[in-house]
Image 1 (cartoon, helix red, strand yellow):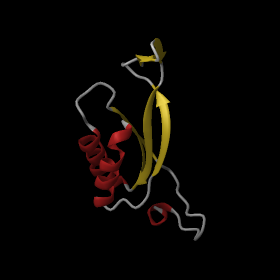
Image 2 (cartoon, helix red, strand yellow; image 1 turned 90 degrees about the vertical axis):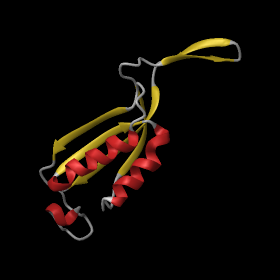
Image 3 (cartoon, helix red, strand yellow; image 1 turned 30 degrees about the vertical axis):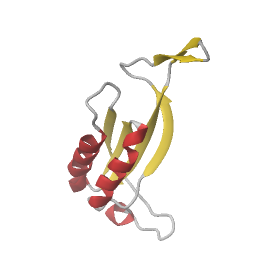
Image 4 (cartoon, one colour; image 1 turned 135 degrees about the vertical axis):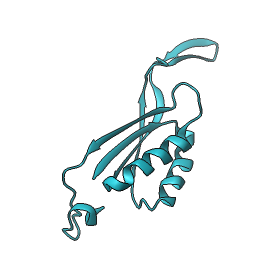
Length: 112
């Protein structure tokens, strides 16, 4: 099993979610986050005053998948989150040792 964390632009969320759902991925967690990478934030003007926006709004998607589904999920996220502009995001994949569904006590792939 793999645990995938993707940081993407907020307006790409629906497109990515639909692509993952089409693959048969039944659940994911979405969190509104702020951060920066190479873009280092940006400057904006509000009511004539310029100020720095050091943290850019992003969306963090987290999902657990069977190992054989990981590459397809990564490809779906990459394809549907990409704009070709700086700040498209990152995907992190780590091994997942144990999963348990609290309600039923199922473990492993059955718990996904």
